[in-house]
Length: 125
Image 1 (tube, rainbow, N blue to C red):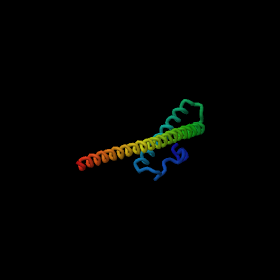
Image 2 (cartoon, rainbow, N blue to C red):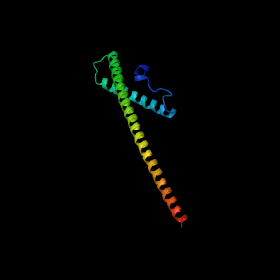
Image 3 (cartoon, one colour):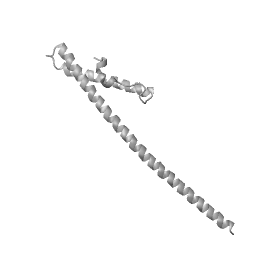
Image 4 (cartoon, rainbow, N blue to C red):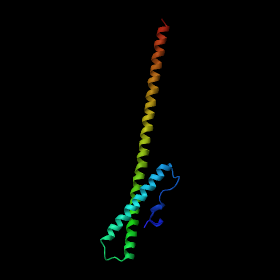
């Protein structure tokens, strides 16, 4: 039951913004999802002893297709949320970094002013 037709969306895309380890991990996770969907489909149709072999295969195929479609939608929703969180954190980090640099420049400028004032006072004596 794991012919290419059961891969919703074509599976992992090589070179799509990740290293080989991430692609292999994604592939293995998707294969595990397929195996799980197939087992659940067999368990589902196993209770329907009135089905013919052809009907059983057809129901299992539809069950697996639906399960994988739903799993892919869930993964896409999670991935979109991860991207939005990453963007939000990057914006916050950039704001924090700008404030830190601003404070550092202000403190260094203040220290330089104080040092020059102290030097001017001590030279003027």
